[in-house]
Length: 166
Image (cartoon, rainbow, N blue to C red; front, side, top):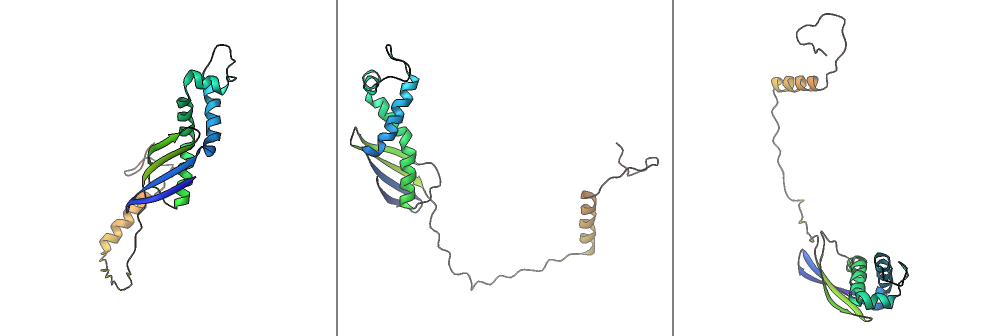
């Protein structure tokens, strides 16, 4: 598999991938097996239809489409790893060339994480104003905390004002 990375802008790249047909062979075999399980042809048991009969009845294109759909995520992942890019979403894939028994070529455009250069910030001075807190603010906050974390207990007396009754 050959892949190349082309930078379209700082946040988008285009991967161009060419896959020799030999690498697509396992996916092609899996496509034949999958189609074999899904269809029935008179004179053959389900799952026992020869590949040439599938090609005659349903067309080689259907098998190739299934194989490419199966293999594309794997080849895309390999190209991303080779190109050392960090994709941020799903790619826009376009199959540019599919020659039977020769080549599969596709492009994938995907958004990537931009390279950010942080400038030197050691010379920047930051001033923080001291917060002014009054005794009333402290008492109010403590009262809210007491109410929030208060626990209830059962008492053996008549209910009084402020009691919680179940």
